[in-house]
Image (cartoon, rainbow, N blue to C red):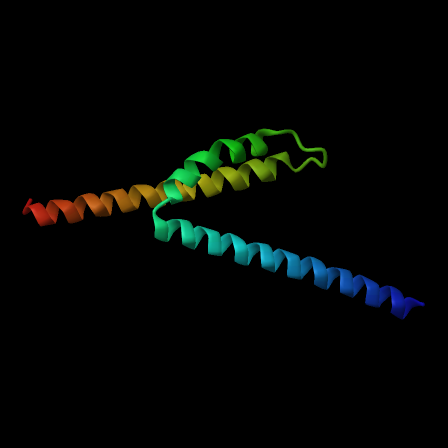
Length: 99
C-alpha cells in the first residue's frame, strides 16, 4: 500500500516537473523568436501592464510581497539591460560618426 502511494506521489512530481520544464522551453523559444524578428519591444510593451496588474492583485495565499518583488526585480533587470544596450548603441554610432 505504501509503495503504491509513493509511486503515485513520485509520478505526480515527475509530471509537474515535466510541465514546468516544457513551459520554460516554450517561453525561451518564444523570447528568442520575438527577439530575432524584432518584435520583443512591442510584446514587452503589451505584456508589461498585464504583468504589473497581476503583481499588484491581492493574493489569496499571502504571497503578495514575494510576487511584487519578483516582478519589480525582473522589470528593473530588463530596464537596466535596455539602458546598457542603448548606451552601447549610442557609443557605436558616435564612433561611426567620428566623434
